[in-house]
Length: 203
Image 1 (cartoon, rainbow, N blue to C red):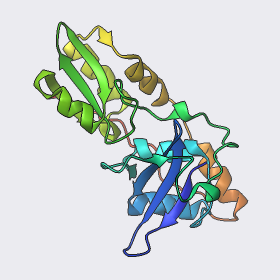
Image 2: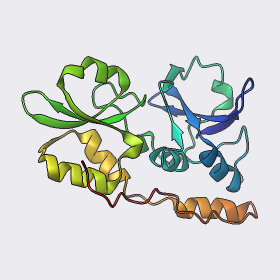
Image 3: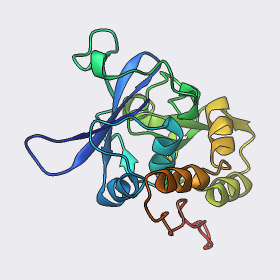
Image 4: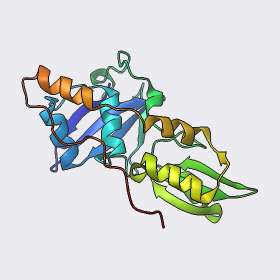
């Protein structure tokens, strides 16, 4: 399960979790920390992976080139992190279509033999740079934007990582936040936890 930590040498908070046997670090902005705090989640405490994903897809938790750390079994915080009892699977998080990394993911249109839509990390984007037509940071991708992008571009070759993420965007986690807040005797978060769908046009 993810664990919330506070930086020792600077202001701010971050989250550690395990994905595919690796320790992954997520940076947390002020709005993300506020949601965790209002849900009663304190520094050093574990919480459900689904809540971290909800923060990720709203842009309140992000990797920013600090995604995958040391192997889980050699990481110095191994004893503090107990990932085995997390009810949500690791596949809840998207990963790179090529290397399965979670580092700085973008939705990418590649123009090779035929146009294809993929999710790529920063390293794989550099390797495929000459084939990239469009690249969008994954937290900016809403259900509406993804559907419109596919309709406009007419891309038929869609990687399974994109299809899986499309399904994840339909999940609703607000009830989990509300339940946590009520258990802690706090007022439930009133704001919409998922960013409003983009109602404009894709340029």
